Image 1 (spheres, rainbow, N blue to C red):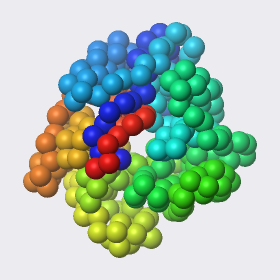
Image 2: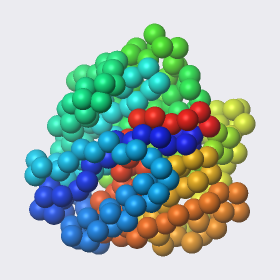
Image 3: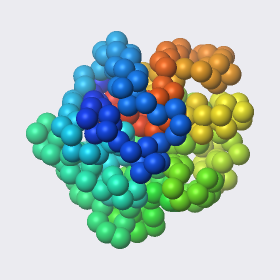
Image 4: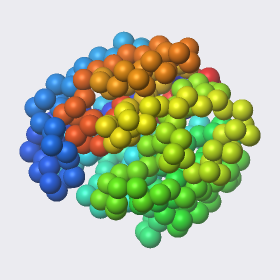
Amino acid sequence: MSGRLRRVLMRRPGPSLLTADPKRWHYGPTFDGAKAVDQYRAFVALVERSGTEIVWLEDSGDGLADAMFTHDPSLVTRHGAVILRMGKLLRSDEPGLHENAYRKAGIPVLGRIEAPGTVEGGDCVWIDEETLAIGRGVRSNQAGIEQLAAILAPHGISVVGFDLPLWQGEEACLHLMSVISPLKRDLALVHAPLLPAAFYFLLKERGIGLVVAPEDEFAASSGLNLNVLPTAPGELIMIDGFPGTKTALEAAGCSVSTFPADALCVACEGGPTCLTRPILRDRS
């Protein structure tokens, strides 16, 4: 999850976001559709500067305001893609967009999560190439975890589930990746108080060092200070406005680029990682 990013699936926000009802989509008070689109352009510039190829999904006015968060509806392995099933009902049509994109790009589809199972990409954290951790909570359930384990087992990949707290309730979004962001193969940024204990011990066992983000910035951003995107090992993109987290990352030897995101990420509950579905990374 931290190797050099070579290819990524993204969706430019457009009519669906500009006309979104903030109450229906659970967007916060800083939401501004036009401003969010401008902020997304700034984010794209940083991704392009890294040399990453972007495979685009376009917003044709389908009403799927959250579809810009391409990390969640699918998972990509070195063997092909898995089409997930969303825990947020408003997002239930998004996996089909991803499946069509993979078919066009010649990426094989290994399988799909079916009802009653749910798994969202934000709950999936690769510990290594053969071990996938999944957060079991509001958005991903046990049935989905079992289905994904069955799909990946023939490819030598083990799946381990960890319970997440309810935190801010059913309508809010707490993914496993809300409390951890990989930075390098052996380093991750975390919000320690919400880490599942068994997951913490697995990270420790695997020799993964932890950078602990400031708790006040986690609270102020609803966890989005933790949502950082590696474009290469230790080369990170994060949202602007959280200097304590940025300083901690730089002290750990990382380089950090930022972009303004109050109307886009903070308001819509998704950060730089959420805005991308990595298709291909180098081995870090």
